[in-house]
Length: 137
Image 1: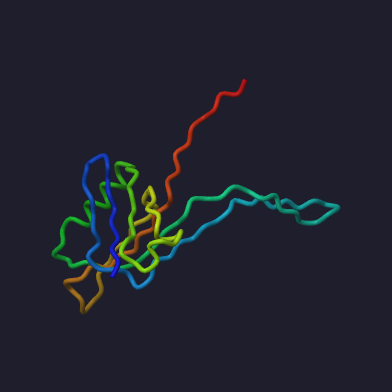
Image 2: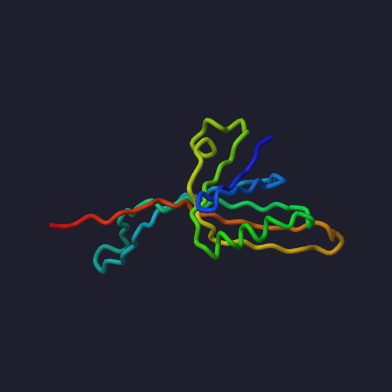
């Protein structure tokens, strides 16, 4: 059994998702540039690695009134959160063994007919990587 938590250092609060998703998807992309050269055709210039995108869908009980406001507040305040996926047999692997700083890219939620006490949701997170500007002399 694994668990997914998000921690907000600014507010010193954390969120533990009550139900595990069937699937956690992690996408790693690269920002390649493609150019069409008249005499040579298409050429690709390798780009930089993009931040990981972590997405999953799950449910929570409608009676749990703190999940939606917690996520909405993190979006509104543009907080950097700390994601931990732990307790899996994959803990030592690169994918799940390292916790990541993330920002929320999107949060969707809905209800279905016939399931009045359940809220369904989809959450997409993007890896946050701090940056600094260097002076050029």
